[in-house]
Length: 253
Image 1 (cartoon, helix red, strand yellow):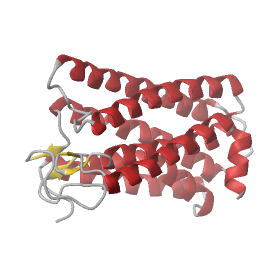
Image 2 (image 1 turned 180 degrees about the vertical axis):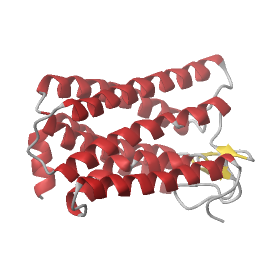
Image 3 (image 1 turned 90 degrees about the vertical axis):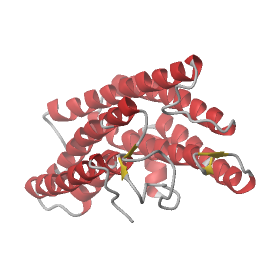
């Protein structure tokens, strides 16, 4: 497969670490089907499954696009930071899940609260460093890739960073549900609330601009203007989803 072989050449570190996370996701699927440990009324291994998939997708995406910077030392530094952050995050999430406990928003004792705080600090470091990678894409002047694709990458990173920080809203209120408690009736797998506002939806839609916008810019957009217009329309809709969640209203019923 072209993408796999090319990614190995472009960024072997992100390729192999991303693959490791996909393998971990498969293990979580097995544990989901074979264990009865639950957190907030759902199988405990669903959350690690989602995080492992998200981490794998992020690593493969950022590994692919950083190649265009042609800045090997900066890419290696980012790789090392990302692997440290994600390893810590996924360890805490999986360890807490395997014991039937929350990882995020868990302040039931000082140690769990410390872990949650450290996870937040780690993700802020990752997000700010990703913002720096985005800055490099805006600063560099000479490119060999199509302009719509370049703008897709730039805007994808920009809005990934902004909606990563939207997670701070959830951290500040120690839950992702607005108008009710976490848990309860939700959509399959993602478990987005069907009864109350859920801040995770805008978080998810906003952060995955990292994949959506470059793909649109490369395969669909005919000009830089078209990818910019598409991005503004998309983000307007995501902001509307966020406002709806903050009002305590479910997106799906």
